[in-house]
Length: 356
Image 1 (tube, rainbow, N blue to C red):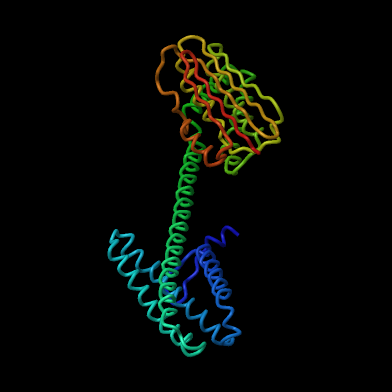
Image 2: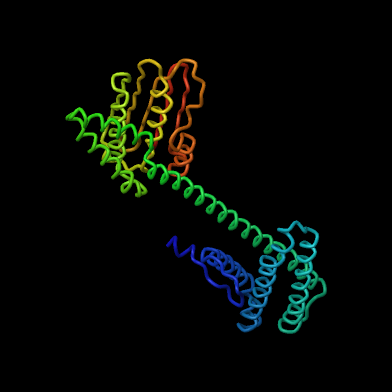
């Protein structure tokens, strides 16, 4: 249904194409106006007969449609949107005057000859009514156009933002952090030289990570257990790099299979902690990552040590916590909180997502 609404159709008697959504909104508007005219003039069916009633409604409706779309497709883009306000209002009043002339002549014929003699004061009341009602309908059409344009612009900007962030995620997936891979392969090489029993485990973890990043992360949402398994592999391979110089822990609570989450959403939290925490600590560093899941929410915290007095920006690294915040706003608007604290001797990040 969404794809159908975004398709385009050609306007009658024109070379212009508009979205189906645009055509449906305008059709609904004119159906309501037609219903109003039918209700307002229904007394004519008895007084003048059905042909006069249909002619009256049709003439008024066709004149309003003509003046409305001359305004929308000619006067608005040529004068109002190019900041030629005086010319725009002049031509709007001129088009209304043309409408009043044609409608007035028709009213003289209808009320003066079909329905009976027209009183002089009734004629000026009709002119006044037609003038202000036409201004009203033109104003509604202009407001409708600007509303549709604003919505469409917002939708396009949101689509661009999503595509930009998705491109950044795809870049992350394709790069697989060269420094991380370089260190992991170096560690694997050292283990193979020592003929360590840990070498096969490293190969399996690397293979599992590559499979997740190249295939599973193409999905819009993945089971949380896969995301957590990716983090576990990432952390275990980083442990090889730091050895006994770092205390690194990952804890999980709850059922990880009951939640679907956007892929690679938790990675920036841990990647940032390694890049700006453990890698820059002179002494023994530490990192704590906790993932708690329930049926309705996800709470992830990452804490890492840092050098006391280090004032460098810790909000960079990977796709960055800033871009993570943008992804969260697009994926879980109003249903998440991201708490970042840069303390004296440690860095703390807490992510809470509500799923219902």
